[in-house]
View 1 (spheres, rainbow, N blue to C red):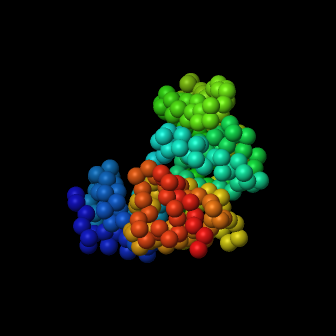
View 2: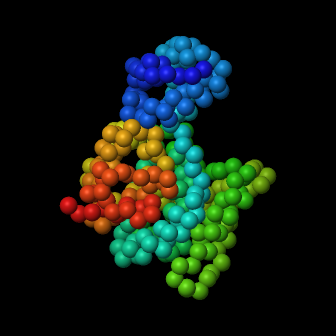
Length: 280
């Protein structure tokens, strides 16, 4: 079944009346695609979907979780991480402390990618790391740090591409993947090392509510492949929120295919997928 503008409005209103979730600022096309997928997966009509949302709170929350889940990978887009290591890490090495917020962290692989890189470059002890997502289920997965064994080959290859990358001609030191993950083929899991998991403060947060922090400022905010699901006007509000949450000369990291648009040129200077905060 195709979902049109009227059905979309009814869906948003129904969810908002029966929960604390507000999808009115989400990109319409993105939301429609996800609702249509839910209808196919649940083999139900649109009216039955709304009826179940109104009458079954557990079902409502499962639908919300299906809409808000985003995929992520360990060292996703290795070229990005190589550029980050070459361009941004030297600036971080000048700082006595490093504060990081992963906004929309999903199941946590990106968070652990950053922690691994910091540890390899002897910066982990300087770091204070927060990670948030609207979806409680993915936060629980991120906290456990357990990932399916079927990703082992892909994760190990991306890990090698980033960790073996040697931008400054320094002597290469071999780092095994197993330094950071216990590989258990029998249980079909990859278990993240405890010292990495213990470094992160995970919590649930909806970006529509803007910043969850009052006094905390950050040196880096990661928000990769998240804001593409929001309307342009609300993207602008979130970018402005991020701007005010960053320290001077700090960084906002977006997805490889994402762009702020011209309206943010006065606040950020772009270099690849990383935006450096202007002081105005």
